[in-house]
Image (cartoon, rainbow, N blue to C red; front, side):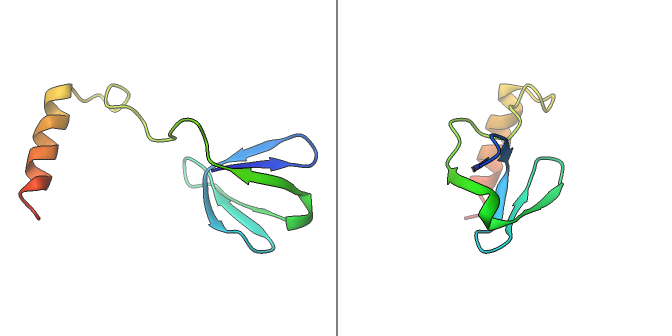
Length: 74
């Protein structure tokens, strides 16, 4: 989620609380507490914060193998 601030800034991450204060956990685990009166709005992001398979140093085959394995756990 992306939290737009009244000051013009933006905080991206997973929203842990929408109450006062708004609590956002950013990539890398950084937790930010933002007073609700400083928040303009919150909205879903157009892209994921999750790293791609390539960025993780994995191949398409690695991902296919992992998916096949996870399907056996149902």
